[in-house]
Length: 196
Length: 168
Image (cartoon, rainbow over all chains, first blue to last red; front, side):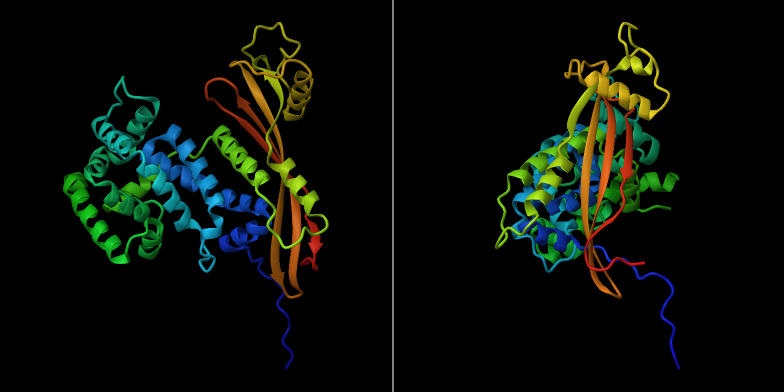
């Protein structure tokens, strides 16, 4: 019995991040593909943590550092997501005090304060409109390490393994930090959930 | 009812993405780094210089012109550009004309950016591996002053096969 060939065109397989990064060792311009894939996501993540204006610098610096360190990327991993978020997290860590201050300001600002910066005002409005300030208050109470894990899981949607790679910590530590962070967070936002 | 992680994810997803200006700046910084990177291959194959040149052309955002903001109706009327363009193509002509004059934009002007990207890609199908490229022209009109609305237009050129047999 003859089997007809499929009529649909074959799926076009995209290059993996590892292909692009490995290729960029010989043809550096290929790293542009990594930027195209992840710049927006990394920027949004940094925006959440530090505000839009700081995010502009953090996101740009993340890709510069990634490009310079591309030889260290483990090309057995198809995705560069965790690696890039790890670089961004390191850069964000330099602003830990500013981040906690920002979340505290967001927690206070159901209506943005007049003296707050533009980013804080925008954050305040968005927070008030969408989530109420309680999650921000919860985030402000977390240690920087716990916040890293929680936000990488919640926002970047990284797996435990990816978070462990990104932050260079054991996988078990990811679980314990996440559990501790969520417990603290629920203490703050729990009443809010019940009000809904 | 949403849990704590979902609430934070919702907030994250509701944030605005990077501005055109921030993306262009970041891309330019990376492009400068890429451009300065030494060639690491075993030997420079024929055409490689051309490809890098093409990429260089693709990633450098060129300040072509500063278009008087009177184009969008708030100028003082003294400029020859003090008319509203009928469409983006007309705006483009005004931009080109303005580029012959003062290239440094004032806060009340627009920066026009014309960029050519060259995308290389590889795909696999029944006839094996296929390499191709596609030129993309991207144009931006960004306020030089305080952030406001920006315009962008992308023109995707035809795919050009480089190696292998393209899919039908």
